[in-house]
Amino acid sequence: MARSVEQTKERIVDAATVEFSEHGIAGARVDRIVARAGCGKGLVYNYFGNKEQLFDVVYDRLVTQAVEAVEFTADDLPGYAVGLHEYNRRHPLVSRLTTWFQLERASRTAPAVSESVRHKSTAVAAAQADGKIDPAIPAATLMDMIVAIAMLGDPDPDSVRLAVGKLVAVTP
Amino acid sequence: MARSVEQTKERIVDAATVEFSEHGIAGARVDRIVARAGCGKGLVYNYFGNKEQLFDVVYDRLVTQAVEAVEFTADDLPGYAVGLHEYNRRHPLVSRLTTWFQLERASRTAPAVSESVRHKSTAVAAAQADGKIDPAIPAATLMDMIVAIAMLGDPDPDSVRLAVGKLVAVTP
DNA sequence: GTGTTATGACTGACTGGTCAGTCCGAACAA
DNA sequence: TTGTTCGGACTGACCAGTCAGTCATAACAC
Image: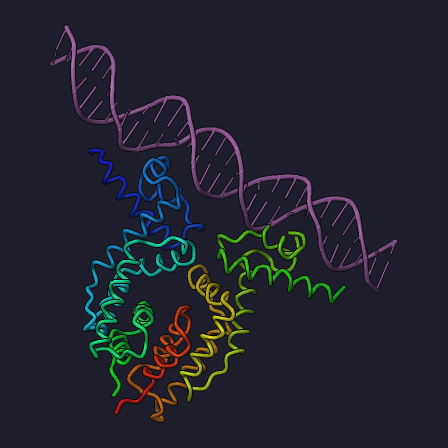
């Protein structure tokens, strides 16, 4: 078994992803993480500094993956919402981790998120100016609502598509 | 000293409300709670059993208050959403506490909540049958979406009213 | 090929501190 | 006096983070 730093780091991050999404930062136990990763405790501190910094690495990785996986077009917000909804259903850890982040780490801003949010809001605003999307609701607010709806666990995809379709529909 | 017992309990619950909404269950510190309440540590265990049970008392009380404070009519869901939104802005602890609850205590079901949710969903379903609300989205899902929108912190009330108005509007 | 030294990934027992929960005695009411 | 409320010192478990040392591999000498 060749020792590879990168592989070991990844095992730790994978284990930490599960632990943090279940228990949050305060509830997570480093001992459980290293047990799951099959390594000694010291490695967490060698590679990541401390528990909180490990959480940040875990969160950034997961969110970046999610942002990259779900394609976005301001022209088809219902489709985007359904895509995000599907992704969350397929990766249930993401929404829990995001929620923990908002509660326990709100002070920090994840670079990947803030950039993607800004980019999407400006695209939506442009589509509103073009008359493709109802301009009654501010672009940033509209995006918040769409994400909130897509994050709900229970609904079926059709309801998500329908609801977002109604939100963006231009009323005469 | 029967009267002062109730007062002391209330001081503890008030203090615990702040502590739990800031740090959740795992992050909350009983020492901080009793310091804020101005009483000894033992009282928490005399009156409430343990930290988790204290959280349940705190959560049930806050949620019951919220449910009672915001009036509901299936005929005016946008108005309900705005009312809920206003309430959350005025009582920012509620939404945080609810989120902690969902993450750390999802197994438990708060009686006040489940009953009110069922009641509201059936009322909405009836309004859909009457043709007052678009029946395309299932009543329970629609309620989830409305609550999700109302829980958002950033939007202005007008946007909330507008959005929910669009969701419920019957399309010809 | 064999012995020797160097490197750094990795371990896990340990430490210092924290925190939930207990318990005993003081204070007070009846 | 007797029962009840209450404070806060105390206990023991737990846990984040550390550190002295192990071990596998590589590199080099002969």
